[in-house]
Image 1: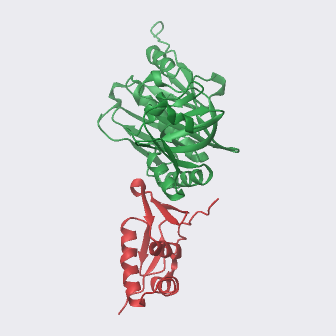
Image 2: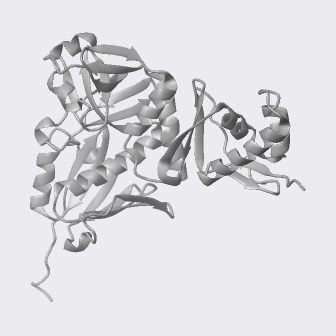
Image 3: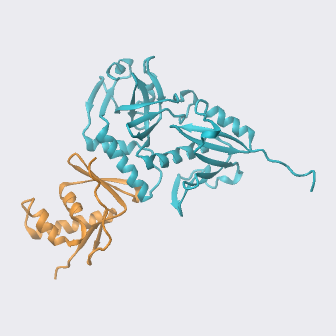
Length: 106
Length: 271
């Protein structure tokens, strides 16, 4: 049986889209990351309330020509990778605290 | 006991870097003289001091001389420590204490850290870069050690005012970004002028076979700016401020890659 996962942006990061690239800086080691397009979509949609499966269906499968099952497996792997770097939070329950917001371009 | 009381005379200087005056109090006349010499040209008036530090010249200030710098925010105060010093600072009271041996490098390090914290509050930063004023505009030349900061500073023509060959001081004011001169340098003879000008461009330095200026994509500019910013703490709020300061800067100030050969003609392309 598939588990339902929820993802939220970590409050310990700062993020901003510069040009076409999403830069994310983690307070953990002051490390700077550049997210690829899929990771950017996942990060932007990670509100802690929408199941990962729904994010994949609505935001990734509609954007890229990819099977839903493959996209979900890749998204889970990506989310776990981002979580290891302190960028995303993952839970099997909705994540209550409001996530960090991407700063708008001035 | 009458007659045995010793009055300790407290002396102070006001060190004004980036237009932010910091009073430093000490009871040691030799240390005071060292400060006056090292920060000559950056002395402010007593009445202008906005922040204040007492220096305790304790021989036990250092526990591990080789330790990395540590900057932590706890209970409203900043705690800074490295091998040769430890310090604490309360931004709310604007006061702090530095525990160090009588050397110039420790207080210089504390001042750099304090200024990075103050600048971050306002969207500014310290940057590993040379900077200079030409025709009323400031130009920053950033790069890690060995990329040519000192070289390009040394090649500057006579109509140029050198702000620093090592650590640039950038403030965000109501009417844009301004670069200020700093005394932060390993060689006191290379100390910058205590003046400022609006920042016209940031150049990312690279060595090459010919002089060339190319625009840098905004994301690359942001990455390279962040890589060259002086940044000491892992505090989430501070990380957020520093990151946003870099992103704001590259959106508002042109950033170029400056490839140059080490001769003075490179300055024909600047200013």
